[in-house]
Length: 149
Ligand code: GTP
Ligand code: MG
Figure 1 (spheres, rainbow, N blue to C red):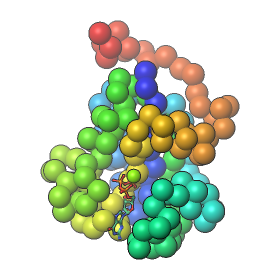
Figure 2 (cartoon, helix red, strand yellow; figure 1 turned 45 degrees about the horizontal axis):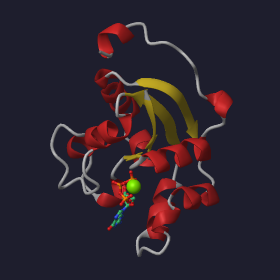
Figure 3 (cartoon, rainbow, N blue to C red; figure 1 turned 30 degrees about the vertical axis):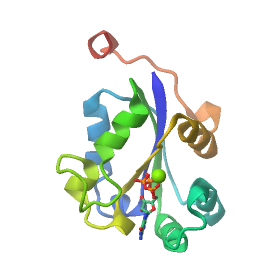
């Protein structure tokens, strides 16, 4: 299956919704293949968000994401990049549909709880930016016959 990089931002950790967020990915049928909490070094975060470095909100964004521990994860499943973005919801939580993570748990763009890769290229880049190969587990989902056609 396709892999995507997902990160619960520091507000998700502080607000105690890590479990609720992980449950949504598990409920969908995605398989967790990597997960770690980390205090993100500023340069590591700047590199992750380098596509936004000319944007006016860049410094605020980096300060926010470095303000406490994050939970970095890799999830695998059918079209997991697009599917995870749908679970996460719109960037602005005000516009995010209820039922999505941002729609249900967040109010502001600068406290929108979670990141998900937006393309095959960014997923590949972000997975290798955040994880070593040996930090990703090879395991078989016990109910895979019931998840995949
Ligand atoms: P990520 O999954 O975090 O990459 O969010 P996204 O793909 O939905 O949005 P995008 O990549 O465009 O922006 C990255 C992050 O920057 C967003 O999740 C927000 O936290 C923040 N951000 C984007 N636009 C704005 C803005 O206009 N103002 C502020 N304060 N933050 C913004
Ligand atoms: Mg993005």
